[in-house]
Length: 240
Image 1 (spheres, rainbow, N blue to C red):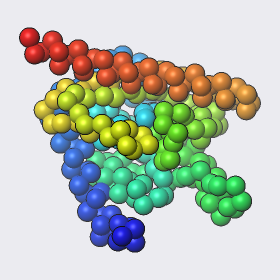
Image 2 (image 1 turned 30 degrees about the horizontal axis):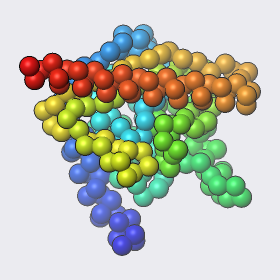
Image 3 (image 1 turned 45 degrees about the horizontal axis):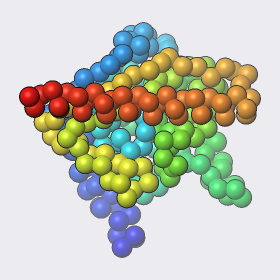
């Protein structure tokens, strides 16, 4: 079964299916953006890059931010795993090509070299004025805890980071998945809460990075909870 799921044909079909769903959600959900003006200077400046973070469990809602990131040269950081393959294909359908990278296990020198090369590629992309969208708790979690890779790219490139809390209502949330993935129902309401720009100092050490990981993880979760609250209140007020 695992071999079948990883076949090119199945991956292609899953990529098309997810890509189609992403576009349906973008076009039919009524999206509200809070504090989106914070990212406007970067969108208007071709020379300034950006790193945008949202939680892995909100991938099915991610095209809510497409109207902003379509204004820049934008790529997505995606795992080279089987799941990452069809996600990369789905995002490619909407004009967001992938940079494939994953964290290497200790002792796996080949994957470590691949990860270093991908991070170098991503850093160069952002430093050159491109935008990079990252799910910083993926591909394996823990849920809503930022991994260090995105901050290393921000530190090396010197470019700003933006947090994007995304939610929709009505929606289905799968509690038995590690990331509690959320799927929006078409024709509902959605919200994106933006925060930034944030920066990682060029001379940040391991302790500094650890502190930023804790702080930014809390901020991104707070933005996500804020988005959830906005769509719940809008749904409640619309029912009376």
